[in-house]
Image 1 (cartoon, rainbow, N blue to C red):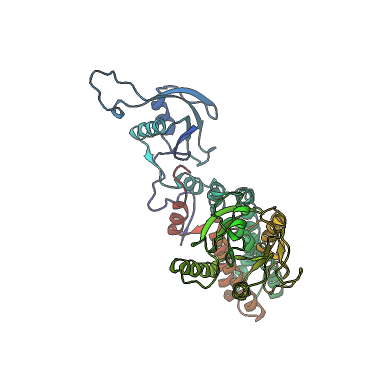
Image 2: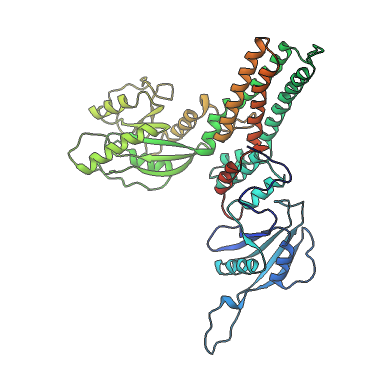
Length: 483
């Protein structure tokens, strides 16, 4: 492990040179942004637009960019013309910038040719092409953000639902960092008092009694447990969940799949066995990013291809976070229906009685308790044809995946959305429990101190105050280039 401080240089990265990258997504757009960070950022930008005067800090400067003649292939008898554009340059001087260094942002028209030309000229002027996430890494190393906030930047970029964006922005604002900081401060107070008692053994003086220390640690443990209690829902918000739609052939699985996506993604016909493979699409349901999986109908068949589809359906069931078991309300229950209900009885599931617009013939009374169902054991009636019941189904899906049916809007404390954070909090909690047990045995202060210091190290790893270079490389390598 390596301690982070202002002078740390991360192995494999130089933090003293100037880096450049295209900060906007690949492809054409109205605007494209080139980001430059480092001690030579302003000089390089001046060379790109032929400006000798310094750029005014935090002001947009209109300029004209001209590319290099080396970019153009020679054409006999045709005068050479450079790639040019009108650009806007904004200068953010150190330390009041995203990275804490001098930063230049060049806004140009979003042509890939123009952006590539600006990038090439900047590299020719002395900049180095940035590695993935290197701008945010420099912000972290320069103390502009901590590791939780750095990870939140990536989550905010990757967010596909408003709930994901809000959770990421909360962490970027420092809500989780603040909660961890307050826990760490109270833990440090106990550690300091125990260490003081250990430093003066001859006087026999205890700066904190065992009972008082256990009481203080109980408060710390309780706050960690509150964070952990919401980590499952937080991870669901961040990572999403897999929802498998299963049932016998022709009960309306693909129609329900299309209805939840609000698009005709799956082929729907009256021919049994139309779906032969698992079809997966992302959907925003109740604020959650869910992978909806349309599966092949489960039945005995001699068709080799359909047999493989049924096998894949059963494989999907083993990894699904929630199963939607679809039954055809307009026909009597079949052997396939009973097999599917039996195979999914131990899973988190919702039973959907489809085709409620047709006369009922299922033979199962309304309100019948389906063992293993998430909706209180009751089935949900829907009609994909008319749309009836779909709102109830969507609400039931969101409630089933949220802890104890909690609303996705409920956020009375900072959410732990990252599995790395949850694992470290679990380790800190275990160490604190060992320390509490040791204090109850009235042993020397040095024994509980070892566990308390370990818990402190776990908390410091969350925010990045104490972490390894390998972990930092792993985290920032997942970022896009230019961020």
